[in-house]
Length: 123
Image (cartoon, rainbow, N blue to C red; front, top):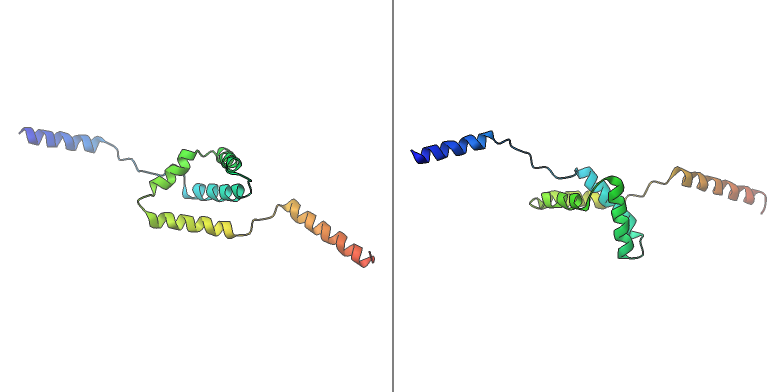
């Protein structure tokens, strides 16, 4: 009788508990975009201290903590195939040419126009 009461109590407690869906702290897109930006930016820094500072600035601007970034990887630690896909996406984005700022494009066009005029004037 005591065993049945304990079993029934356990079942009632378990059924009363709401199931929470275990989700990563940030989305895949947030993780990928943050890592791409961090890797691009820190590659330009002269040392690890400057790179670390720059990475933190990027995370702060994006509203992501280091714990959330690491938490995403920890969340999927049991699924190495998924993490491999995420890193393939990061590597793919890193290999894409960076879009130029529209002001840089305008400067390029202006410089070529000046250069072609100089050649046509015989300079």
